[in-house]
Length: 111
Length: 309
Image 1 (cartoon, rainbow over the protein chains, first blue to last red):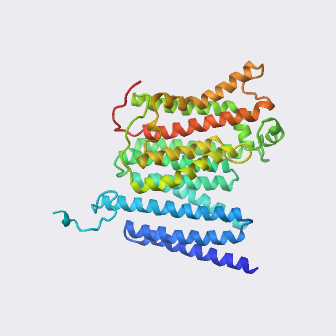
Image 2: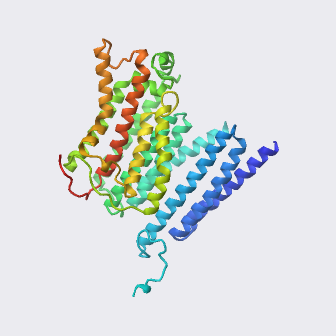
Image 3: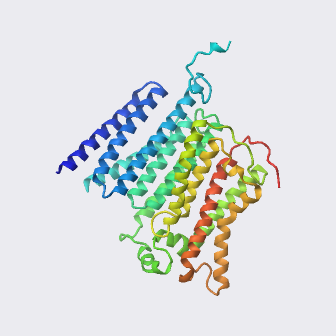
């Protein structure tokens, strides 16, 4: 195998490791927020490694740009949906109000 | 080859496992989420079977829009525990399921040993269809009737929704959505709209077309509504009805035109086939997008009284 192929394999393995760790966190962590943390953070890095690996095997710049666009859109979508789920979970648990950017702030300053 | 077989076996096993988990979920919400996962796995299966058209439609309609409708319905029902069925219903369902499975197994066993069906006929006559993608040639030309009637079914669903609401439009203020979701959507809307137009445009020579484009645009309408925008609820009764009906009407115009020009109904002459197909597909995509988004928005109960027109 060439050096390029070895690099691809290494990047794919690194990507799989992060996906595995993220899924493990999703299954094992105790509450919604820590599960979201594991899932989004690890999967975004994992997808980045996979995209980097596939870019090395792509047949042209256009394909690389499309792969990077997919990664960026996935980052945007996962960050947004993670926020929405976390916001919903906080509201359901009685911490803060919907769309509250800082639910942990002290509530007694209004009095 | 063994690697591909391993992927297929894994996909098939996951498909059955997710279906089982969705049906036996104790909670409605969990069941709906598993159903969405099931739709995505089916889309992967279609992709593995080299049917990207169906994979795209399944991901957008089966997993996306149906999932959103079911999530909404589950929330209206409280999302609580799944009520167990009575023994009579269980026995009837078991008999029906075994019967359907038996018929399917017999049908698969009865398949001709050589695959193909009408593939070679389509390949031989595609030159006369006006387009280069066989799926579009079948849907819009060779079997235009089927597509026409499918659109009529969709139109009926839209009309039934309007009838149940006793209103001619969906004019209502949506609940305020999350400002962050709205901000992100402002970034994503142009990109997704571009995807919808691209899918529509490439349908004549590659996987894509009116159904996939319409489904993507409908998903945009639903997301925009959930983010607090008015989406199809901004349409007046007249424009809403016009958009619901324009797909069926375009097919009707094509059918009437072919008959008036002395041909058989929907038998497109080669010189006209491409422009007619593109025009009909554009109208169909508009109708599908508006109907699907309106079905989601209109199916939500508790909207304020709507003015009749």
